[in-house]
Image (cartoon, rainbow, N blue to C red; front, side, top):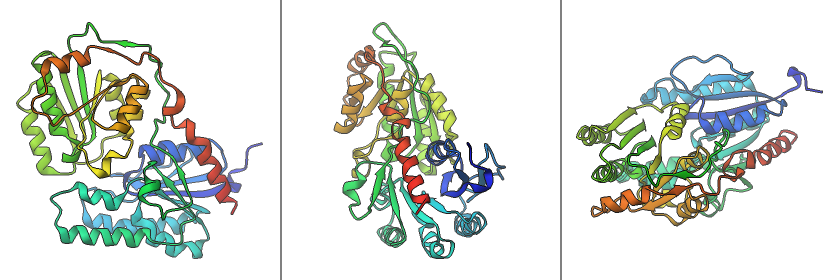
Length: 376
């Protein structure tokens, strides 16, 4: 027999800059708990408009102007206001920014606190080479201050490598950014007679994610496949880099840009992945990236779209295990156009895709953790 609404356990999932309907917080964490019918679910995150409750989940806005530093400061007060209104028995923080208030309010409101570690924020500071040393040093101190709290009852790691990078964070549960939708039934893709290809670069567009290198790779392909196309869709936080992308893409009629200074709705990204013949992951070889499993690896394989990624042993093992594409060195000026074309003209997904790439393969572990902590 289902529990009555009044008996449900209040849970708050909190992000600051991530969209209110972020794929991890909304589609994975929130929906996994909704399935159990045990929790009164509340979520706070970035939204430019006031959102009404959906599917029985109460929605709160943390930030409405993504580019406003003032609004980012006020997000702390909005989070505190939401905490006092919801009075959760269990709080999942998806950002270090909310940990000080969460830690302070914990003995007052009496909840269990989970920190969903989605990034190694300290290591990520090295991804911006233009950041002034003093600014980077201050940011590191702020992050370490926020994360260094004894109030956290349990950690969730979005990456396996965090167990090595953050050995002080325990106990933990690893929940990778696997695909939350239905795996597309894909028989073997045969591109051996294919003459033109639809390529895609999606997600966050920045120097470390190699958007310009991806454009250069595509221009090489055009020498053997002039009717191929490239769609670039995503959020570009650096205006100067967005201008560089627009300048380079403007030289090539086969490139279509769908770029925003705000996060792109995730569903739009997934539709583009499904429509593409190949997804490009031209990431630079950076310590903060190389040990991680990009979400797009799981999404592309689940949607039956082959991948061309930068050389990386971890990613190459994953891609080869599903016959899902190949790796290359995007930075090489001497990439042979004919070799690129030959690699695209191949067979992919010859053995299909299993459930290991799907969020459902780890969902029960998350549900069990929340059930255990909510009784504490």
